[in-house]
Length: 242
Ligand SMILES: CC(C)(COP(=O)(O)OP(=O)(O)OC[C@H]1O[C@@H](n2cnc3c(N)ncnc32)[C@H](O)[C@@H]1OP(=O)(O)O)[C@@H](O)C(=O)NCCC(=O)NCCS
Image 1 (cartoon, rainbow, N blue to C red):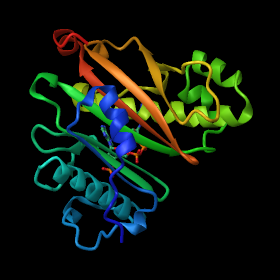
Image 2: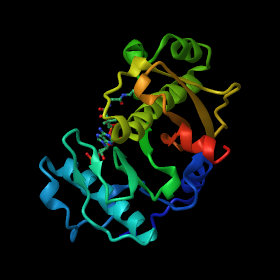
Image 3: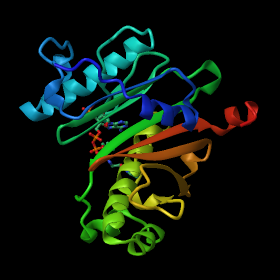
Image 4: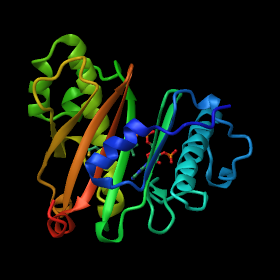
């Protein structure tokens, strides 16, 4: 059973996104390699066996992150909108896709509050162009149509995932549901299949998000794309001179 699940490369991405160093990311390529027998979060869970396992493994990974940050590995309950409820002063996010799972835990500094963080993962090849109009904006579709088939598929997955990461980062701050067409993500050109990681620029017209600056990135792990989003209050960024 695997216990060494820390993911320094992704932690580095979150640090560059503005998280400072009090961040821990854990991941599992195969959730069955994570020992979940003795886990103590069962009481929060209802559902089938596969769902139970991803739910629990996400929490085990998150609790490893809490321990890395010298916090107690307390149970992580669900809020009424399914959002994870973190201990006081902690921000975090979890994701699972297929057998993959990851969790990020962050202790924002006092001056960084309010702040949010999101992580998402998706397997490439599942974003059929037929659904593009329901999840992508016109500029995003134009961008995708200009790419080669391989890049198009990868970047469609990436854009979809990054929107979900943004959603998770902003939700605890605004409690606002966001439709996919309310956000446009811009990819820096030129993008090639060799480009493992990069930043995305966010455009929106959502007043609840206006107080926040978002840093959004993607990171490819073979056929899985992991995306991250960090929301920092613009007023704090200005005070800190960034
Ligand atoms: C909530 C949502 C983002 C989850 O993404 P997903 O790809 O389906 O699933 P993932 O495995 O990546 O993430 C699931 C985890 O997200 C977290 N999550 C769920 N709802 C959340 C919320 N409202 N806020 C923050 N995190 C949330 C939970 O930790 C959940 O895992 P758990 O139930 O085991 O605790 C997605 O189901 C959804 O509702 N999307 C619609 C809104 C949206 O994404 N808009 C995009 C435009 S910005």
